Length: 353
Image (cartoon, rainbow, N blue to C red):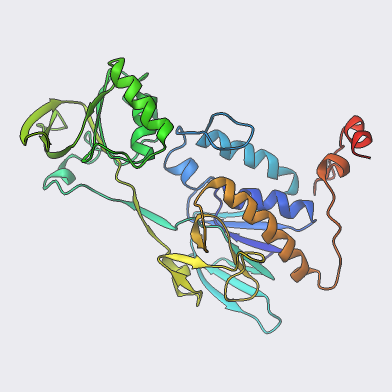
């Protein structure tokens, strides 16, 4: 039986940052994740994808963000159960919880924080009859290692941020990048759309809209795709390529968590955001992309904020009646569980005082 103060389901960015915030309150954390390594989507799906909205980082790769979060939380000595899925949860008579994984590993904690993001994912595949024949033979549904596409002809399909961002990134890696979308308008950030348009003008990206890929051909791997131009008049033509990457998003599934008696709305866990992101079951919280409330934004930044407030509420559950006085780390420094201490700079402390 693994015992901890806060049991975190999910070792993505929000879960990892929870370790740091809990550590400041002298609370121990243990994380469960079905993936074999920490980082969630950032490490498993797009480790080389640049992220632009993390404070103090104009640009940081998703994998590097994971490394930084692990480095930040290391001083608080979190425990990990990796490669196992949280399967069942049982509330004890004293209000604590026992969570058992699919491999039978049991975890005991007074507080459970669900930071599993959107759950497990499956790519949304385009309706091309023979696309399965070319999977791993030139058809990929996500980009993990950009160097894999070095000096190759790549066709990307999609209209969201992933399609736009990877088209921009691969324009300096692949020998040729073509972006195809069913509409003239894109769903991604305006800044990314403007960058793609600029790269099109510079002839570094081929942009074809409104159009869709309707066929894939090749002997033992992808050799060309068939494109249907929708406007101004319908026509079909082929594009020679080495890779076809349809980025139509991922279909999320909550998995066993959906059977835990939590209030679910549109595949997300409802929480009370007016207080502390607690679910309908006292002692169980949901933070990050997997929760929902009025005005919810699915951003890593918002997950960090939710984790911070959740830890304050968890402290009160674990230490009933004990008052916690908030201290700024710029003044108090940080005491790690390993005995190390990071002192706040004296000049900063003096200035604040």
